[in-house]
Image (cartoon, rainbow, N blue to C red):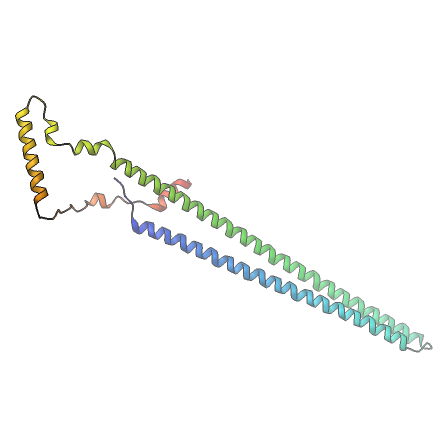
Length: 219
């Protein structure tokens, strides 16, 4: 008759708790990474806005230069216009470059965060499956042991000795019955404590190997 090893069951449950706590910690790290990515994206959006303002300022400066330039200095006006256009072009190129870089970086961070979240979800589901398998196997084992304890073998073992004597031996049957009755009365009236036998070595070795049960079920 098999039993289960309480220490192994407790160790396995502790392992489940540790794995669950690690999963929670990973999820928190992912949330921090996502928050950091959102902060970076917000920073780059603000930078983009500042660059757009710079473009507006540059355009305004160019307009002022043109309005204040002398009509007689066409070369100066043309030079100022060219310089203003160059400033606008450079500012727009830098703004576009920074915007593209920021968007690519944000997409990369979000992709990594999504991948990690999916991996975490898969690991959590796998852990739940293993726990469910363990629970089912434990229930099956306990039900099997209960069925064995309720089997008819016990009734056969616990029959009185007189039940094994045939009807043709009435005298022997009566003697056994009287002796058993006397033993029963003495046992009931006795003040001596009942000492239970220590479990045998072979009984102590009947333990449940929880990891092996789970491994065999997965295979």
